[in-house]
Every structure is written in C-alpha cells, then in structure tokens.
Length: 405
Image (cartoon, rainbow, N blue to C red; front, side):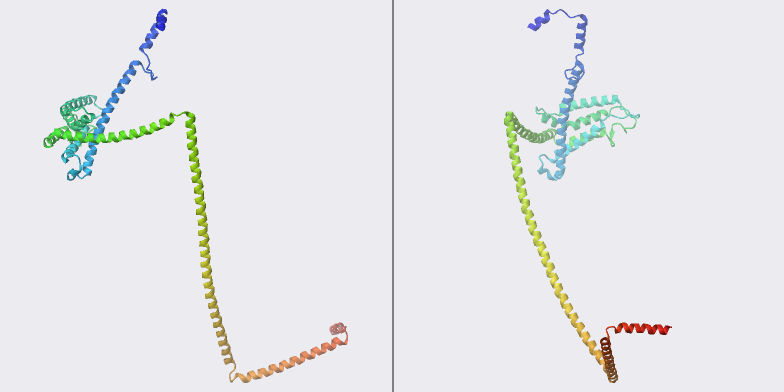
C-alpha cells in the first residue's frame, strides 16, 4: 500500500519516457535471456509443446509398432503355424498382423513426396498427400477403434488400423493427375506396386481374415500385456534407483563433521584391510619363493646326481675299454715278438748270427783294451808333471809353425 501510494504521489513521467516504456513493454525480451521478443518466445514455447506432444504420440505409436514387429518375429522364430500352442495368439492373428504391417509399410512408401524432372519437390502434391492422409486417418480411426479409455488399447487399435489408413491414403493419392516419369520414377508406384493394387489386396485380405473385432481385441490384449510387463520391469528398476538414492541422501543429510569422520574411518578401515592384504600377499610370496628355492635346489641336486651317475658309468665303460685295449696291444706285441724271433732264428741265419756275435765280442774286447790303455796313459801323463798339458800344447804349436815354414 505504501509503495502504491508513493507511486501515485509521483508526478507523471515525461512523454519521451512514457513512449520508451511503452516500446519496452511492446518489445519485451523473454525471461530466459534468449534475446527474443515476448510474442516470439510465446510462439516458441507453443511450438515446443506441440512438438513434445507429437513426439510423445510418435513414441507411443513406435512402441506399439515395435511390439507388433516383435510379435511377428517371435511367431517366425517359434516355427510358424506348427508352433501355435507355444504362443498367446492364434497363427491367423500373427499372419494377418504381418500382412497388415507389410501393406502399411508399402503404402507409406507410396505416400512419400514425388520428385519432378528437374529434381525439385512439388509442394502442392505434398499438401494434397498430407490432407488425404489426415482425412483417411481420422475416418479410419473413428470407425475402427473400439471404445476404450486406456492409452495402450487406443494405440493398439492404431497399429491394427494403420494399414487401412495407409491403404486409403494410397488409394486417394491414386486419383491425382498422372505425372511423367522423372528422377523419382513412376509416381504412386513402389517396386511395381500401385496404390490400387494395395487397396485391392487389402480388401481381399479383410474378406478372408478373421473377425475384425476379435482380431483387434486379441491384438490389443497381447500388446498391452507386453507393454505392461516392460513398464513393470522399468518401474522396478526406477524403484531400485530411488532406494539407492534415498540411502545416499540419508547419509548426506548428516552433519559435515560426522560425515567427514565417517569417511575417514571408512578410508582407514579400507587402508587397514589393504595393508593386511598386502602383508598376507607378502607372506604368501615369501612362502612361494622359499618353496620354489627348495624345488630348484632339489632339481639341481637331482641333475648333479644324474650327471655324476652317468659320468661314473662312462668312466667304468672307458676303463673297461682301455683295459681290454691294453690287453689286446700286449697280445699283439707278444705275437710280434714271437713272430720276429721265429723269422730271425732260422737254420740259415743262426751260423751268421754266431759269427756276428763273435765279431762283436772281439771288437768289444779290443775297444775295451784300447780304452784301458788310454786311461792308463792318461794317468801316467797326469802323474809326470802338472804342467804337462801346457808343455804339450806349446810343443804342438812349435811343430805346426815349423811345418808351415
């Protein structure tokens, strides 16, 4: 009240200031510092909300489509119609679902924008195709969706009626005026399949298939059960995360000194455990090292014993071989001696040997006599004069000089 009274008591601002304030109010910037005006910011928020809603619808439809594809894959993995007892639905439901998915995908491809001859996209044809798709979607969804308030059931119905929607859109797009074949190929044709052909095949399939209400109800229940199971598993996972986060928040809500003390105690305990583990590992390492040393010593001793044993055996063998070799050589020498004696002392050589012996004996006697005479003369010469050798040498030199002169 005081502020309002104070504002009322103030004089009116000048017209320039009022105009500036009005301009600021008109071009007010967004509060998120995006440098956008108020209207642009509001449009941006509205566009984001619309995109988020469309994204949510797309994700829901994608989840239903993924479950439908998974059902078809499980049906084929189980062995087809022969394993219908192992599945929750009848084989006709799986076959009809597979057919509808294939037709819906082909019809979706037929509704893609066409390319002109110069490579540009026809905006008018895109608008026509989108309007036809929206109208066929609305009419098909309102006519084929059973009344149910659950989100999963409505999107199950959307998956079951998607093929009818796409076929209707493709059939409607076939009424457009023909375009010459260009860069994108023949218009309204995908791999040789036209929208008229898809529409005709879908009508024939609907006539031959099971009851539509029973088909949609069975398919909706199966997809709903699969999605509920996945949602329950996801909820359990989030609950486990919440329990873990709640325990962490309880610990963090304690006072800081107590938390620090608790953390220090935990670190000390962990350090003590690590030291104990390190000590135990050191002890185990020392034990293992000692055991390895003992094993190595035993192996070395074993190798030495084996080597010595082999050396002794080798020495014994070599000694035996040398003894036998010496005996063999002795026998050979004895044989050679007897052979020489036999060849030497024959009837013809014995008289000659006697003569040689007699001559050698006589020569030995003469040599010994000459040696004895020389010894006796030498003793006589040594006994005559101690300077006899010098005198004899001088005499010998005098004789040489006389003979030379």
